Amino acid sequence: MKKVGIVMGSDSDLPIIQKTVDVLRQFCIPFEVHVYSAHRTPVEARDFAVNARANGFGVLICAAGMAAHLAGAIAANSTLPVIGIPCKGPVLDGMDALLATVQMPTGIPVATVAVNGGANAALLAAQILAVSDEELAKKLDEKRVNDAKAVLQKDAGILDRL
Image (cartoon, rainbow, N blue to C red; front, side, top):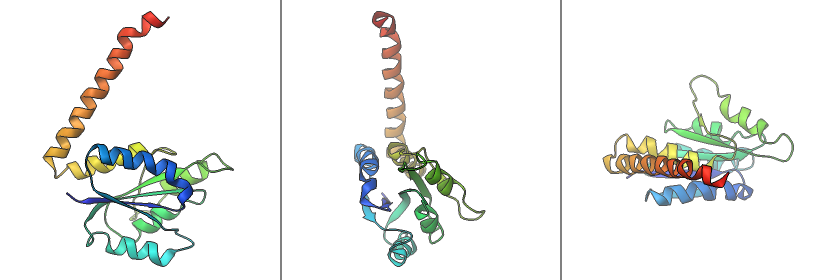
């Protein structure tokens, strides 16, 4: 199975990436995590992206806040699917990161999940990898069934709580 590469712009993004890692572990998807900044370590970020396919990655996930150029910088240097996680910042509540991540120019796509959406980034990465992995696709199908059952159990008990 291909690995998922996770890059965060700062270790302050670790609580969000922890959610990503937890989901990837749940599906037994191999991954690596790195801290590279689009602005402070652009050479290292570029090298990671340029060599990602050769290094066994199938999907790249990038988490960054504020200016949030990391996902775009990685996508500019790789044709692997890139998923951006905009991270909530102290000033604009994550809206700055969301817009910086989602507003990519034609030709450099970045799939973008919700602000602080680490779990959904991992699930999207799993879905991408499952296109060519039947076992993983089965696990995702099972998760959906179990998630639906959990909601229906809550529905069945809601009147008792009122």
